[in-house]
Image 1 (tube, rainbow, N blue to C red):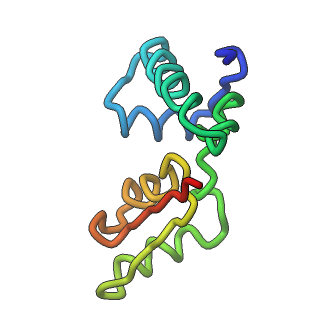
Image 2 (cartoon, rainbow, N blue to C red):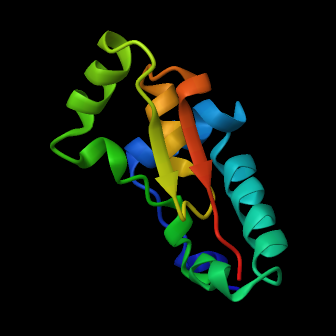
Length: 111
């Protein structure tokens, strides 16, 4: 596991700062590496953690992201489900964006 492979853009740093309440860059890096170190031996599903792929927060960059948040606000009982989510970052991103937490579900499948 190589910490030098970890690069986060400003949006990703902000996402992880909100989620961890860690504002110091060095402390945030230590926390992310600790999670990676703990997850890596669990299963081959997490093999991409060696390259910190789980840190890439892409949901907010999708053209339909604002529509997803709008749907969550305006349609009573709307459910956002992320199947095969690995670390659940997309569900957390949607909740940080205003989607109701009780209606945002995630599920990982481990063979």
